[in-house]
Length: 222
Image 1 (tube, rainbow, N blue to C red):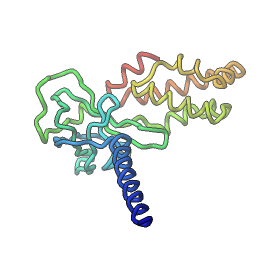
Image 2 (cartoon, helix red, strand yellow):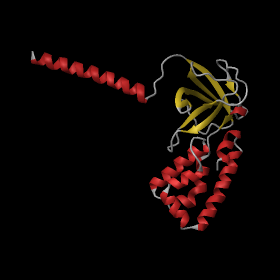
Image 3 (cartoon, rainbow, N blue to C red):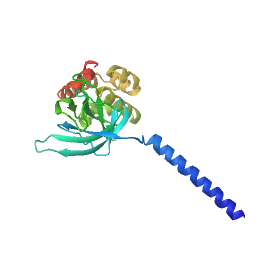
């Protein structure tokens, strides 16, 4: 009798844990239900975007990258799907973004100027409406003389903030630097570093400006 009661309790515990695990997977894994629509986009460079990485609109996951293939003309075609309730138009733009400082990427879809006609299932976003990810190595290389004087926490905060600024997801460089205490102190103690930082940022901004008009808003805020 006691063994049977123990078995029943164990069974109830197992069922509860299974339900809890499924719930956590649904919430934190951003599991999507319902049908999806397949599309593709043409890029000059996908910046190490990989199949299985997410497709996002305004930071919310709406789909998945299904394939990345190099074409004979050196262009790259990215195949992806999006929830059927997400409407893409012939003016929609696609850009590769950094998800985190580890280097994970995602595909961002943004409404752009142009036709509001709905993009048909299987439709393709042309290369003139796509953009590769910001060159993180170039950005960090330009800031190397300054980051050498920062502690690890401020380096991470500065790098993360710069990514948000250049990807159009944050504020301005002025507000970013003001929030980084040791960064401000380092600049105050080294005028030469200030000038070098400005020169390096100008190089970075000049390089970014060549990647497309989608960066112009971020550049204007500098």
